[in-house]
Image (cartoon, rainbow, N blue to C red; front, side):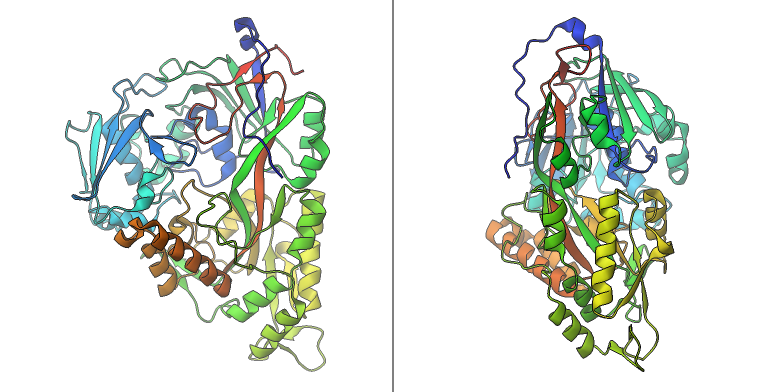
Amino acid sequence: MKLSSSYNNTATSTAADNNGTLKVAEPNNSPFQGLTSPTLQSNAEDQDVFAPGNEDSLFNVDKNYKIINGGLANQTLDRKNNTVTITLRPNAKWSNGMKVTAKDIEYAYEVIANKDTTSQQYSPDFAAIKGMAAYHAGKAKTISGFTYPDGENGNKVVIQYTHLSPSMQYAGNSFIWGSVEPYEYEKNIPIAKLAASAQERKNPIFTGAYKLDKVVEGESTTWSPNPYYYGKKPQIKHISISVVSENNIDKAIQSKKYDFTSPTGVMRGTDYNQLKNTKDYQVVGQPGLNYSYFGFNVGHFDTKTGTNVTDKNSKMANKNLRQAMMYALNLDQVSKKFGYGISWRANTLIPPVFKEYNDTSAQGFPLNLKKAESLLDKAGYKKRNGSKWRSDPKGKKLVIYFGAMAGTSVQAAEYQDYLQQWHKIGLDVQLTGGKPMEMNSFYNTLEAPKQTKMDVYAAAWQVSSEPTPTSLYGATAPFNTGHFVSAKNTQLMDDMNSNKAWNQSYRIKVFKEWQNYMNQQAAYAPDAFDYSWAPVNKRVKGYNVSPANNEFWSSLSLTSSSEK
């Protein structure tokens, strides 16, 4: 399938028409959490509903996500001295009129790396910044690797690294954080309490094209143009973004209640089948920066050391058990039945949007029940005393709990299919709590430092625009919620960004080795890749989700006062 990343609407629009309201739907079955800062956000739903204010990250990029000049800031890499210099544009301001400063660049790292923070965005690769390890451990009050040539209120910061990485040339890399945090506006709030503060929840400020007018908690956000935005002047007077349940989204679009769904919102193959021929809408999309996966709980997070720990005695510690569970699933059939060309079985943990890095030769986990049963037999998971179910190698009863998020009736059918397949190979797998879980409850359970309610779980990542996986699967990464850690995993991820990795062929080789290693370990296993797509009403002009369009929201206009 080939979708266009833009809708080329050639209709003429008038200024008066743009007094209307652009109506955006966020397809989700749960209320959004309401975290407005990228440093504190941990799910895509919050990112989507606050996107008109946050789209303006630090750097502009080209079509391949490579950093170019012209954004909120420019960057210069100095490989000889291992420094990164970030220079803000002189007219950079927050939506309340405050100047964006060099301290605002550095303060984002303080919020993420503080030992008492609620942020989950810490990347193990930040440890390459001088003084970061001491700050992250709570042994230093500041990060010594940051210096300010023109003072904290100036527009330039220099960051000292132990080494520079080739990934630093791309936005979303795991070494350089891509947004600012308003220090003057938040400095009197303890970082541990920032997520609950009025500055974060009720009166947040932004650097993007739009400013926030109102939040209806968990339900909707409304926006109007940010008068202090440095870039292209926003053309629409009002934007509203509303959460719409996944069961109702198709009818809502067909009845023309919304202009489009969030550009990175989850729209499934079944939605595509329903909406692809909807009158007055155009389907727009591109290969997604996302994938769904199965995670296995193999350990815990040590809050004292800030490190994930793999427990060799955990229920899911045996990789043969994990592999067997994956080979038992018929993911190809599920994708064919419900994917409609929009999603397909994934073969690795690197999405194909990263053409150079995704290993097309990797097999992933195609259905193979014989192999699954053989793996279990060899590992000692056997049926004993005439039992219907296999017991563990010590002969103890084995019940495996599967955590899944509540969704559509199609997703519920998929979960039942997974259970049936696991039952076929003699594993007693049951849904955690007996039914799919509400999204926020699911993540609250999963993100606990130690949990025993989910042994295996189905989830999805909205990944960064640079494919290094350290912030997801690194030893100190909070997002590593299955707690898989090994010396080889750490080494391979370090090698991706070593000095040797400036040689692109070497870097590609390491990425492919990592993908095959992770498939062998099966602590995290690929489920499906997707197109990221949206139905766009034909009154919308300027809709373009190409990475090279650095001003998505301010480029939009309307050709009539109501949906066509």
